Length: 455
Image 1: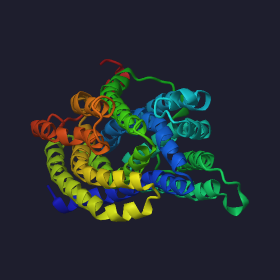
Image 2 (image 1 turned 90 degrees about the vertical axis):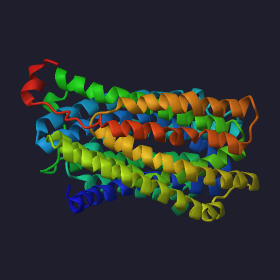
Image 3 (image 1 turned 180 degrees about the vertical axis):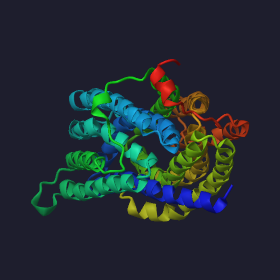
């Protein structure tokens, strides 16, 4: 293994992907800061309402993750035709998912908001947000397909530029619409939703325009509805466990938010700020996981199983360094966050405790993200994540948080700590599975196999 080459490849891929993740998380941070200055209830309402898109993104991410897993291996073989077929599959599925969430958010927002809040102010503001932002959910799935294909086809920097550009526009429009700058009316939550919609329109137009470049992969209109039986089966084998894990994780996180939301406005506000900090701090491990998965997948796809395994071993060690470093950064940033966050004294007190609990949580989060979403996924080992979440999140963390909040009357801090148990509890299990090296697999097939239609 050439360590210098490995680190060069990893850094080249990680930096744009981590920056892209940071910029995406910055939207939520901007919403929280601006709406927090505008009105605490509106900030909390948007945080709660955004859980709908969070669930949608779990489904969309499962589809794009499966496409990335297979695509990375086929790209290393130079099989662009199969990658185009994978791209078409991703677009078909994500378009259907986007329409479903659009209908729910625009036409039935009151039934969705009642899941997350019972206070009238939170309900009303959340409904206003969803009725506008819901239109952007039509576009999200499509643009994510384009951005994912760019990452695996040596255009990760363009993907980052598009996402980051859309985020900058979103943040700028947030300020204009929320506070009524340049003669615009003060719109609050409606302004935040409108900014999201406009930025999504710009993002998808930019994606489609970029795809017409000479070295870019784009959908094949003539083959758009053609279904390759063998490739579809391989895609399902990767996608369904990822989807199961995504739903378990996404609904579990939504349950955490719902529990904190029902503990009162101060708890919901503190949790909203903590969630923004958490998402910002996850950017580096998300970038390394995505980049590492592509590196490992590239080697496995061309049959370099030994080198792919060595890459995985190196990434595992890196995951612990990133986790511990992130925990220390959170502790160092806590005084700054408490000053910046415009919260009541009670909410600020809750936030202080949450920040230190989160620091320990982030060690497990970084390790598990890089190993499970990066290394395991690169070789198609996607079932493990689903099983581990079923046990640690739904068998332990979610029940304890619900019982602690609604039955035993535990303090806010203990309930929040319960929501962080799953990532820490998974580490021993993850390491045992990692040492088995079941993830060292070549998932590719020849075009004759794919077009032959026999599984």
